[in-house]
Image (cartoon, rainbow, N blue to C red; front, side):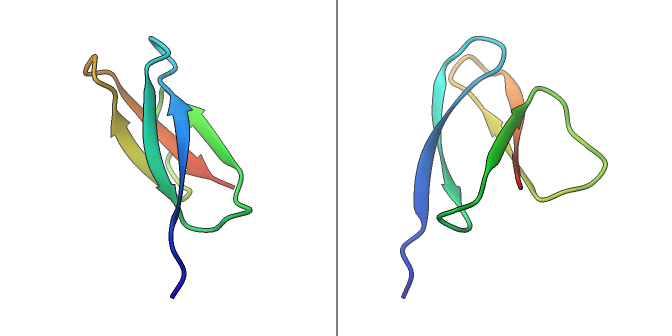
Length: 57
């Protein structure tokens, strides 16, 4: 069984850190304040209620 890896990402609006699980160890992540029309992503909210998206490349 493979244990999911977690990474810390910063909110692009305020810099507050959040933890996310990534699907693969060697995946590259990109943080965006905007949602895109396509691509694997996760929607997050920081503790300051800012919504942002993390994309897996």
